[in-house]
Structures are given as structure tokens and as C-alpha cells.
Image (tube, rainbow, N blue to C red; front, side):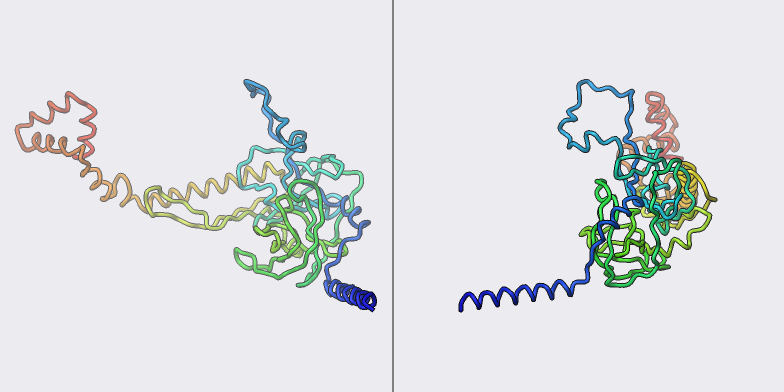
Length: 357
């Protein structure tokens, strides 16, 4: 009898577990589908910088590094995926074109470690964080990914990409919500619970059919409320590279004065990465200079050296009082004391001249 009761209890537990898991609508990618996707999703890498002119007093203990770090010749910086037979998509911030970088060469790398150099950029927007580029040389087998512009809360999705720079991986989750993009709220970003790690940037957010519903651009600290730009935003990329920076700020040190403006710049495509980097950084640098010039002009009446508070500060320094007194004697007395002091010490003369002008 006891055995029968235990048997019935075990069956009930199994049925309850089955119902619980059946109610969870998380699905997983088919293994064959993953093998196909591996020919469409790639790492983005750049060579490690090595200077042959640098020599060391003694041999560096490279054996202390982890195995992969010892043998790796490239930095793995992001993810890209084929959208047709010739072009790939990634996130613009993978290349960070408006910021200075010593890295000049970029490649995609497949599962076997073969690399293919990046050629030219055909679509680019750092506002939408999207970029489309082609290659100088192509893999033998390419499986372009297809877009699906329909996505809803509760859909099962997969973050596909180069997680932690360790190669392409696939991790499951769900669409959690939609939130307005930060700058102007022009579209709703996809919030999803699939894990996203450094290196996933530029990778596709996939549905259960392996279709792209979004472009992964940002993670949060807990990795389970991450951000993807809806793939429908790719339809709005034009034939001009679009760069923007909000709240560009210049300040004058030692004061509370500042100027804050938004910057924007466009230039025609296609173009190389180096051309885009050079032009966008040049425009942003010129924008900073103009803001600085405008701010200096704005505050020149109250800033150093004309500002009254700076003149008051200089005139009331203890080390200057004796020379100011000597100067007064020279001006209002017989004119002999101050010149004799100044002739002995020209450095003091320059300090006195500051005080009396």
C-alpha cells in the first residue's frame, strides 16, 4: 500500500512539472538552423598593436597569461551579420568613428578563425547605432539573414553574437517591453531578457525562425533587460552618413561658466572607415573650438585678466603689498624709493607693474 501511494505521488509530481514547463513558452533554436546561422554571423576583430621598435630589458612573462590571450593576435570587438550576399550590418559604436583610435584595420572572423577585411561603408548612423559595410574578400559560404519587422512582448528571442569576445553564441530570452529611444523618442527600442555581454554589440536579435527582429546595441548591468534597435529602423538609413552628439559641453576651468549644444554632421556614402573617422572627428573638433571661442567671448568682461574679481584677487595678495606701497611712495613722494628697489630686482618690477596697471 505504501509503495502504491509513493508511486501515485511520483506520477502526480511528474504531471505537475510537465504542466509547468508546458506553460513556459521559451523555445530553442534548432541545431541545424544554428549551423546555417553560423555562416551568416561573424566576429568583428582588429589586430593587436605591436611596435617592433620597442625592446625590453628582460623577457616578459607571457606564460602567466591565459592560453587564448597568449596566442590571440586580434582584439575581438563586436559582431556583424550578412544582410545580403555582399553587405553586413553591425552597430556603429563597434567602430566608434567620432572618437580617436590607433586601430586602422578591421576584419570579420568566422568560426574557423579565417579573417576577411572590411572595405567600405554604405549606410551609417550613430544616432540609430547602425552601420552597413562590405568586404574586400568574402567567405566561400554565406547565409544572409532575413528580416522580420513584427515583434511583440512575450516573443521568444535569442541574442546571437560574439559574447565576451569568445566566439558566436546563442542565448534565449523573451521580449520584455518597448521603451522610447533616449534622445528624441522617435522610435521604441526592444527590451529583451536574453543575456547580452560585451561583444554582443552589432549582433542580431533573432526570433525562433532565425529571423532578425532587432540589432543589439546595449546591455544593462544585470544582463537581462537589454536593448536592441528594431530592425525596421534600418529602412530609414539613407545615402548620407549621419553623426550626432547631444549635450556637447565646454567649460572654463575655475569658473561656473559653460556652453552646452547639440552637434550634427553628415557626409556622402560610400566611404572608407578612415574617411568617415577623419571627417567626423574634424567636424566635431571644429565644433568644440567654436563653442570655446563663443564662451570666451561671452565671459571676457568678467574673466581673467579683465574680470574685476581677478583684479581684486591679484591686488590683495600679501606678497604684493610691500611693492604697492613702494610704488605709492614713488608716485606721491620724491620718486626715489621705488625705482631703487626695482633696479635691484627686475622680477619684482614685473610683479609691481601687474599691480599698478
